[in-house]
Structures are given as structure tokens and as C-alpha cells.
Length: 209
Image 1 (cartoon, one colour):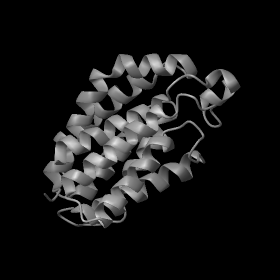
Image 2: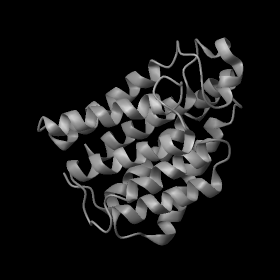
Image 3: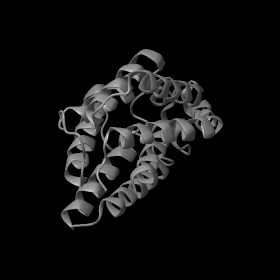
Image 4: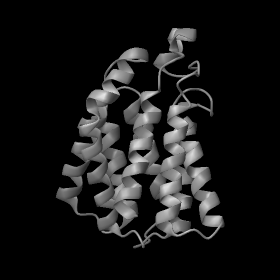
């Protein structure tokens, strides 16, 4: 399996579908420790990204990612827009004009995307943010690729690690973002950004696996 532009678009379409389907769940999570807008922001942003891709029909995966990043930056409020916008913009950087992505290229793209989020949000693992899902995901992907796993298997392991990372945010005390204002009261709740990050990588595994 190699990821061409159409496959990248399919990932974004599936991501939009899942953000719409999980909108109320993300809102519920965010209402406990945030501004209760993460579900609405993510569903609106990814639907707008799909509409933009349909209008533009980009020809390479990097162009797809750049389009999504720009749309999320302009359409999504709160912290999610800048963070997810940066994620998608950075995905594009290591792959340039490549027409197809294999495991190695996706690994480099995902690592760049995660580092972009870290730089933008100044968060580290354990801060109860989307980094707690994204870092395990990229590390699991890198391990799988190094072991010679198939692309489908590597994507599945990456998504599973993101899910585990998201669930592991429940007992954490938030040190970044809106949730950090709650101090110890932020413990006992799953981070909405980590949850949407898992949903995004699960959609990639389904789209490309």
C-alpha cells in the first residue's frame, strides 16, 4: 500500500466523518475540563477541509496536507485550530512533491507533524494534551517500521498506541491549556485533544490499512 493524493483525501474524509460522529463525546470531554467546544470545532473544521479539497483537487499528498492545515488554521477556534493546523502543515514538509507515501515517508511526516504540535503548544508527554496520544503513536509507528511490519500493521499499532495514550490522560493533572487552570480537579477526565488525535490516527489506519 502506498498513499497517493486520493488516499490522503480519503483519510481526511474519514476523519471528518468520525469527528461528526464523535462530536457529542468530544464536547462532553471538553465540558469537564475545557470550553466545551472541541467537538464542534473539530467537526466544523474537518468538514470545511473536505469541502476545500473537493474544490481544489490537490495532486500530491503534501498538497492535501497543506490545504487541510490552512483550512483548520482559518476555520477552527480555540487551541485546536492552531495545533491541528500546525500538525497538517508540518506533515507536508518532509515529503515535498512525492506522489506516493510508503511507511518510511509517512513515518517522517508523522514525526514532523508531532514535533510541530510540540513546538506550537509547548507541551511534553504527561502534560495531559494531544501530545500524550501523538507521541506514543509516532514511536509505535517507528518501532513497527524498524521491525519490518507491513504498512497496515504499522498503522494499526500506531492507532492503538494513540488510543492507549489518550486513555492514560485520565489520571493526569493538566499542565498546559485551558484544563491546567483547574489544577488537581483536571484529574479523572480524559483529555479531549488526545482523544481527537486518536480518532485521527484510527481514521488513517482505516483509510490506508
